[in-house]
Length: 185
Image 1 (cartoon, rainbow, N blue to C red):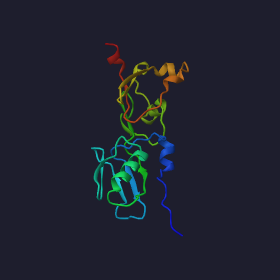
Image 2: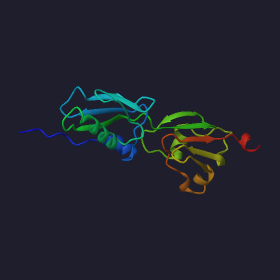
Image 3: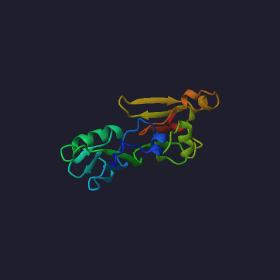
Image 4: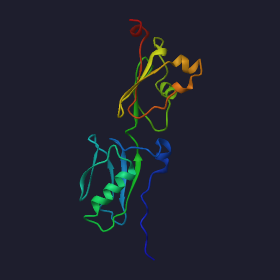
């Protein structure tokens, strides 16, 4: 009986956390398996330039691609060296998904997103507000394709039940909580 290669796989646990639209990013760790070819199978970390290195095909851009798209590209590039390569990619560690909370929070800094996280959860992760926070003047800077500046009023969200302001945080978001002193000027 001849063994059949597995289909391209995904790490169910990772995708349930970040969704099927997950895009590979710098610092992510990928397990790349080429069916019945241990020499080409590797665990790689995506470099800061967004690329990975693999035997035979050298550098390949991984950042900004879904695992399915990268799987297809690697298969196409390996066809030059291997007959009918079957490639699978498992995201072992998602390290590129993070947000930054700055300003008047107790613990400003860079925070990893390991699960879907909304604004209220992000503020809680950073320890909540300081006494001088201008809670009605939060700004979420989203530097995606078009770049956005989203104004949030925490009091409207929490006191007035405006739950639409409790946006889902996306990788790379910067949440700025200004000081009351700076917004009064």
